[in-house]
Length: 407
Image (tube, rainbow, N blue to C red; front, side, top):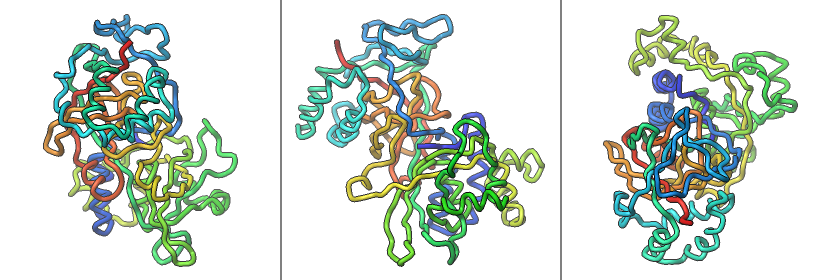
């Protein structure tokens, strides 16, 4: 998953994007507004590039902290961690006995497609337990794993939970009939780490347009829909083919122009075009200044390129691939700070707030630049309108427990 924001600008981006989305028709506008209002504040820049997972401590004492406040490495650790893991009892986990663990087992099995070294020996047992009862699964976890309460270096066990989702939009293979906004695959020769053309240059320079013309994947109706995909980095398209047939496909992150992300809300504020980044202010500005909406979008020079992935009955049930390199499971996958929790770690998540009551087993399978800190998670809500509504409003307290193999 790829969310093109940074933690520094997430608040401004959230305000700006939710204001301009009023130009869209309902119900698409409702989903996109919900997404931009809530998700931008918590989403992160995600790229499906698996990375090695570290090995946190197995000892009974809290993690020892190094001179810079980070935990000291133990033999076999591949990276430093921003959290300390304090041994806990199973009784400490809220709702541990009530969670239907079988709902999380698909996420566990996906972990085994790219297991962290510490969990690889457990995968044969986990596969056999896929048809076991919840009581057997729970007993196995209590025998083979040990819970650790995740805390910040200062001992704070409270954190923040946000959510993200996979938007689903209407698209067409052929330009016309209102479909005018392209989604591109990466052009040949796109530099890996050097800045390429800006968003404005991509959309205006004839030589760049000619270079990208053969790379069009699909056409969308509205630039704000395209903005959502560029921020989220993945989405589902109900794609109308040239012959009139319709099929469901996924577009996934395939690269960027390596330009920095800039908040359009900040751009408006700095120019005095709005007094604040509230919805009424920016919505009124966008409606009163339709000729400048494109200029506002060009204030963000970053541009995302995609690849098309087919969806069948099996793959449609799963989400896009997270940073661990495995498909995300709706309601059972989270994005975490990989310097606090290694990919593939089973995590007990507890969060109670106005948007949702959650006490469940989830898997750390994704990451992001705005997901930073010991007790910090982004909850994958799934795809479509209902998931977008939850992702847009979920921002509440969080506690986490890592479930690590016993020696």
